[in-house]
Each structure stands twice: as C-alpha cells, then as structure tokens.
Length: 255
Image (tube, rainbow, N blue to C red; front, top):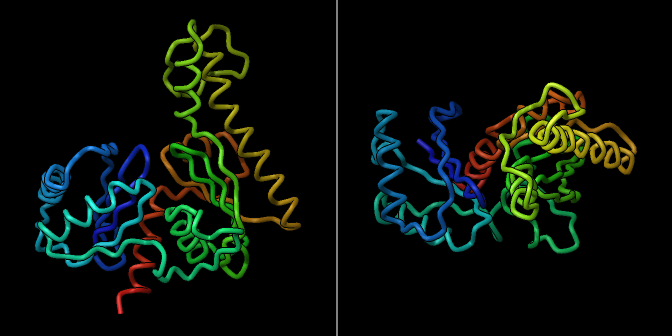
C-alpha cells in the first residue's frame, strides 16, 4: 500500500491507497516542534484503527510547505517503516511544466494539485485551495502551470479580525441566514463567508477574462464544500485532490 502525506501550515493530511482505492484519510494539526517518534506513535495508532500495520505500508510519498518538518518525516519513515519517502521537490518528475518567473517559488502542494487536476479534469483549469491561504492555480490545456494568486485563508482572516479588533469576538464560521447581519456575530459571519464567496467569484472571472476562455473550476481544502454551496462558479469539489496528485507523482517516479 502507498501512504501519502500533505504537510500544510495548519493541518497534515494523510491517506492510504490500496492500488487506486483511497482506503483511509486522516487530518492532524501541524505541530512544528513535534518529534519523529511522536508523529510515528500517532500514525501507528491511526493505522491500527483501520486494521493496518506498518508492514502493510510499502511506499510513501509526501509534499510539504513546512520545511522543518520534512526531515522529521523522513526520519520517521526510515526508522519505523524502513522506507525512504519520495519528497516532491526539485528533481522529482511531476508531469507539470512550470511557467512561473522562478519555478522554485511555487509550493509543492500547488504543483501536486495541478498534476491531479489536469489528470482528472483536463484543462484549462482553475484550482482554488481553501486552506491557511486561499490560492488560485491556473493550468493550461496542455497541463502547464501558468501561475496564480494567493490571498489570506478564511480562518486566517477571521483570526486576524478577532485579534486586531478589541470589541469583535471570535465567531463560528457558519453560513448566516442572510447577507445583512442583524447583530455583530451574523454581520461577521456574513462578511467572512459571503465575502470569500465574492472573492472567489471575482478572481475566477478575472482569471478567465485574462485566459480568454472558460476554465473549469475545481475547489479543494477544508472550506471548499461550504463555500461551493454558495456559488455556481465552482464546478467540482475534490477534498482529496492533493492526495490523488501525490499518488500520480509517485507512480511517475517509482521506476
């Protein structure tokens, strides 16, 4: 079986593939000071919960936007699984040509998403990832990564509002009944939820205008589903897009 890991700034997403079947997924909070032994203990317990053992994991692939954790995970798999994981980065085949000014600046997770998105849905494509940051990645018909845009994530923006405004409370990020809030809580929920819907609609419109054609819009990340319910511009929601991309890239490099 193949274990894939997406190490993000807020969450670490794990997935186990049995051939093409995604057999299990887990989400853990990212703790930069957690040691390899601690992550190993958590992972082994999660595997046992799914009636899996370390011996069932034969292959590992990961991508990371938290550089200090990459050697931690390499140590984990070498010590407990006797595997050297494939780490998506420079020198790894992804099937994606990066058309940015400096290709090394592009986060590994964004390239992995581009590979998965083009494989699953073709192109042109706009992939919006609603995580710690809200990102927009543009993929051509040929599968080239053309560039994109980065905005603060929903939770990041909400926390900044709470921390910087003395009289505004921390609120649950749920959809209010109407856009016009009748109290502070619903007004904040409206501004955050519907504000981000408008952000996505506006960015998609501008990107498609620059492309000169309609591109399919794929949403992924923790807030993809609730936001997609509020707008017709999102065509597909795929919460496991990065995990699928890691599997594809692993297969490209396995030989």
